[in-house]
Length: 338
Ligand code: KG4
Ligand code: ZN
Image (cartoon, rainbow, N blue to C red; front, side, top):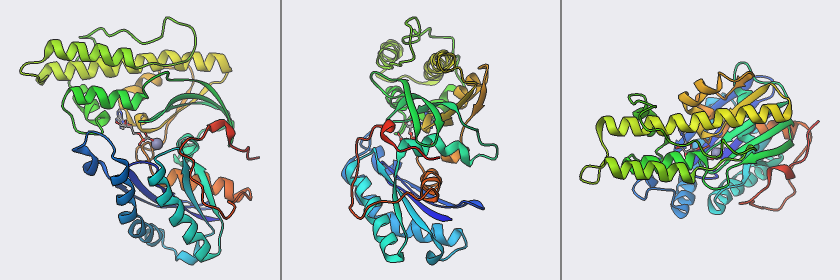
């Protein structure tokens, strides 16, 4: 089965083609980061318009790169939610129109299921069951994954998402949006032990996370270090490294707890922050097998949607005719496959 996947939930337009026999055939991505950078965050209306502008071209490119014709497609998967409703609707209506025109089924995919299953695109994918640590710009959750559609939420952030905390601390250092990867770059030259930030919620039992206190600690430190309102040079490197180190240590401790609670010995790191090398290195110390998606499929992309869609379409699932975006969508409502 050959499936086209379309991702438009936020500020990345992603289109990919996945074949259940041959694997991923193509992957096209356009990031709107530059469009939103001057506003310091995603502007929903601009995001929707940019998806309208880019999606038809990227779809043609993805099909071309896969070496197939549109008529070879067996299904179209798209991100149905969660996400920005206007941005979602662009992908949904395009996917539905394309599927109707070709006379093939369309299927709405849960964005977080896409992230959780993205490691299946790696050369050595994990087997079920596993604990997923999903850390992105909008979510931070520990999920027990027993199979496709069998998800149990173990814990999550009570305030900011991990990526959001990275982005906000990056902003203190005047880094462009989204700041996570820029902060990680600065941290490479910094001393992670220079500022002893408290690791949030590790002395309390449980798996929940919180980043607002750590963010405030970083803000107070940034103010103390600032010269003419700016933190620069070694001070900026050390602040970035100390923040990143504290996040990695905290997630390490919570992952160990999630593994203990579930009795599982496999952990899958997914979502945009899964691209963070310090975090990957730290989690490798866990007494468990560690998996993460190839770098290109950590942040939002069409490949993970094409993959998740292909699994569900192959199991005979397909949409009804109506168009429905689900800006909020609990992961545990998904139907089980197999
Ligand atoms: O999964 P994603 O592309 O979008 C959402 O679904 O939210 O995640 C984007 C988030 C942003 O907050 C970005 O700063 C963060 O992932 N991110 C990183 C890195 N690469 C992306 N954070 C830390 N280190 C990185 N290398
Ligand atoms: Zn995402």
